[in-house]
Image 1: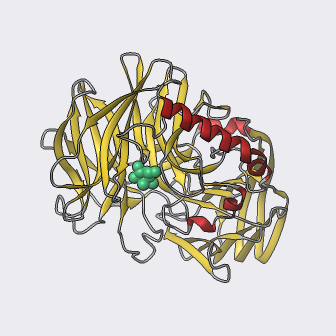
Image 2: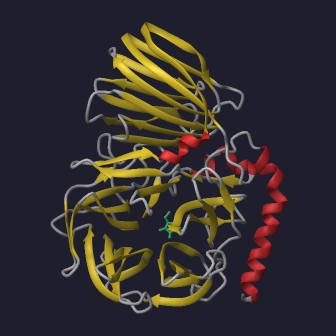
Image 3: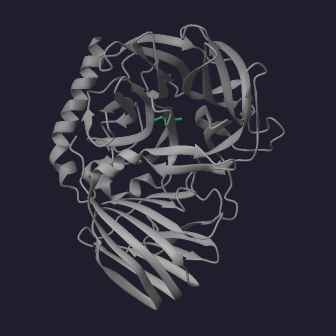
Length: 484
Ligand code: FRU
């Protein structure tokens, strides 16, 4: 292990110890979501199952609640309910990654875990350089950096990062998020036979590619996989203008589906669909496990979206990962559902069936709490149905449109909204609340809203309102948090 690596690990550990009590005393601390021990967390990285263990790495800035020279933090789990916080896997200790071990992915090959990541480098004048790098581990805990495996090809700026690697027909492929010299966002493909030597094949999709118009100046964190017979490209484009109810966050995350021709290479695809309509969701990554499930985890945050207005900053930490979700393809769209294993966190169920509310607002006995799961099945829905959470956020359904609102994080005198027209009538709302997070799966995963919420810490009330008559049942489980 290099001296610089050891020094950085030591400094990060001191930072964790110095602020441990402050972070742990924060009422907004989470009980069943992955968060940083101190400092800033962003993208999930290197999500993979190896043997009976799932590895989830994350972009980590230990020294600040802002962005900077990222480490790879590291959690492992066998069941998505009990986690081990491993020691950081990678630090920005080498010339090729000194300004950040940026995002990337993992693949198991010949009994070793291979991590591919972007080495971010800035020279004395602030000019950016980018290197695609490899680190290898035999035990899943200690990683040996192998250095640079792919250089920046001609025609692209140094905004070229976030390698996602997979195997297909006995070869390896790597998709990278890129910006062409004329400042268009692209997803580009590399190929390799041994994971060490990589050949640049060219763009497979992008702004002004494949007959698509202008679609952002940079594409981050691409992920490409087959899902129930269709090819899916997930990407986080930057530079889309808000368009009606669409693209309301500063940057987006969504997907294209179609057919990837590996030889051309070219992704014949349809239009872009956002994966999540909440206030905080970005840079998701997927993996496939030994049960054949395609599982997605995202970052519950958005870069440059009033990040410093999150009140956890005062307590020396910011951001978290989403719950793991299973993806399926229903022939038209991706369906996202909370992973089955999460049911293991449930306490006894509290069930109220056939509740009718007519032109009224009501609390429902026992339906309250800070770390809970709610499942609401609607039988009939009035003109408007809404759920007020902790006198802070509100989820409301009217004229086919679902709206989530909360006080504006920066300007609390304003309310901010995210909304979408549902593809079908409202039938089901499945919600996970964890102190300062909210994940809402609508109509069994047709739409998802993911957001941070910062209600008064002692406020636990949930109120149901109906204009006209709404009849529904509600199930609630208190969720046991996980010890890390
Ligand atoms: C996305 C991103 C990636 C980059 C990483 C740096 O949030 O900007 O493109 O690799 O974060 O932390």
